[in-house]
Length: 381
Image (cartoon, rainbow, N blue to C red; front, side, top):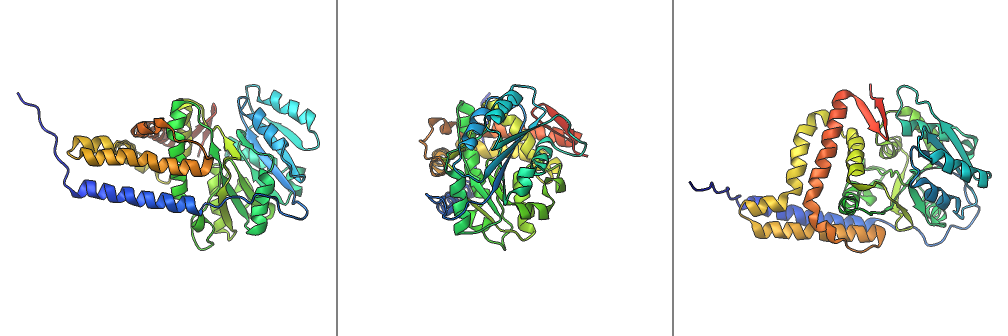
């Protein structure tokens, strides 16, 4: 008995995919060209006061190096507030040691209680912004607890604002990737982020595009207060981007720039962390409950395009797509990090499985009405 042959796709399907690939290439080129760099030197004149607000929960592997980098900033007007949000590892010990060495620059708050109706990170930042250091600052800087910065980075970011004023400045960081899963997924995620945040449209007050980044979002204190701060959206899982969106909708200006390689972080550790991050962030997708049953197979099929094309009669087109995607990733990766091409990118169709797993997990959380992150589960109702 003979085997059944697979159908051959009509020509318009591979031609459409090649056209889409060309469009993606053009978009990538446009984004990386329009992503501005920070000035090389700080601005003249007295430095404005800045309060860096950092939420930390079970960050013992990264918070020490991150905080040391921020404490070494050469901006004299910087004060730092870290809120330990109920850590169960060595994070409180690491923070206390640095607070003892730098009492004039660093304040550490210990918070073990999460009130109903709040996500942990949002509540931690709410507490940080209520401190005397934050209330006295002209600018609030929000950064995650795993972010490291070269000593002159904050001064250069303020110089960018002096040259082109804005109320919100987000910097795109370089991502440190160690395991094969990190090296495979994260550079593609960075390229996708640039697709979704066109720098010229973010800077356009008439455009709805906005940009907030967990690694570095600098916001005028007056704008933060006018928006109601984090208390106005205590259950927002993608707090940085939504804060920028609320600011722009309220009439405040928003800009973005390239922070890497001087601004960098290791976001996740291995494939498990990547899936858990997708679990949390996908909860911010509008209509997740309705879309997830379609998104999950769609993501797998999209990233499996080279294989599907080869099986359905168009192996040459499948090869073109398979090779072109890593080339696009390489350009975006080198623009934001200055680092070399990774051979592991040739396995990019596997990314669909990791994304689908995270979306499926988020779908389950959405059905249950909870947000889960770093061992804490919070009801979203």
